[in-house]
Length: 464
Image 1: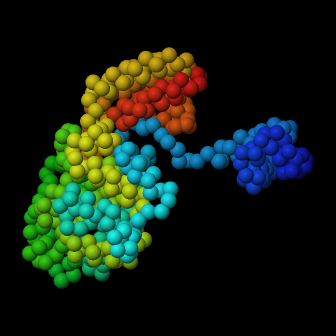
Image 2: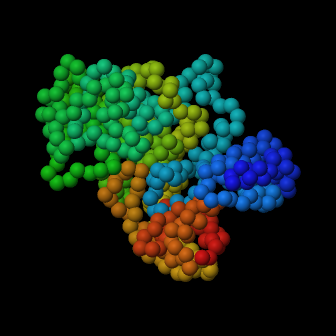
Image 3: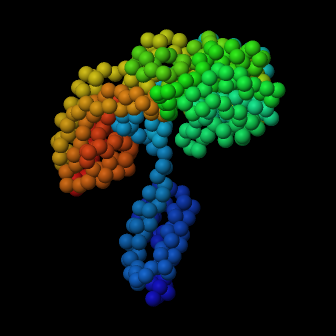
């Protein structure tokens, strides 16, 4: 029977003359629509041939409408704006830290045309692109020099390859981290041509363990901040200053990977244990590695800061070119760093810091306004304001919770999963978190300007 059905499949030209696809050709290119029709028909023929039961071919007009809707769905970009109402401020899936207005303006200023990425405006000669941010990083961290690459994983790989290829780097066994996306420190070392020398045990590593491991093949000592897990109880690790003293006594560099990239002390937000870049430099670390898009609150990048001779050696390694950043990242990072020169201004204008410092009273007032408007939607059975706890995210302080306020939504005549899915599929996408058969919209991670967007999204949700 499939052959008889296949004979009824209309031609591409016939379908293209139908109103739904003819209108689509006016909005999209002719080649896109033709390609979409052909792909759809190819898929349809395969479905007919493999179907267990005979299928009836739709009327040509109905089929054209179906194809037009399918092409439009295929044209939708999977990358779209989102409202992060999960409560997780550094949500990796949602792009981690939102950028400051100054960073957005800096991007706009250089993105639409040419920019002095690698040109010295005084001499007209070629220069290094990291000069756009190097002085700012030196001021904020106390380092002699700095280099920026695509992310902190890249910073780690490049540093190890440049300073220790073919030799050993000593790391505590309790710091052999694994983070998302299959990043494992031992594998990164292997990729950089470095031999890992792990010392100590999972929970206890002493300075004497490092000392006994140092030999002719040792290129560096390395400390790694275990940002996404904590070893507690019967545990011990050498202090950074102790490792620095030991490394320097043997004429070795100390590499300190602090991970999330705090430029300020986060204890002011009730979050403890995150190392600050300036403190590592002050303690004598020769190279400090950290992210730009986590606690720093800037664009995705990795920062290498430290002694000039080592940073320059890293900069001249062939991998540096493969891992370099573009003008957009440099512009956004520079603008974000400038804000940190005035801590009070940074607290107000770096979105991550502003969200963290928002009072519970402020969150509760916003939640009450949103809840009262959400409750008026026929798709919402109830909207309640509740106190909750959330996490910073992004692999930072995983055991420390943050006080927050949520709008808890119970849908009318449908499942909470269905409500969450419809909100995710909107423009912009709205992401909350499901808890006890209710969808929580956590305002700790929602920018104040997005409150209206949340309400409009809920008003457009269909009832079950």
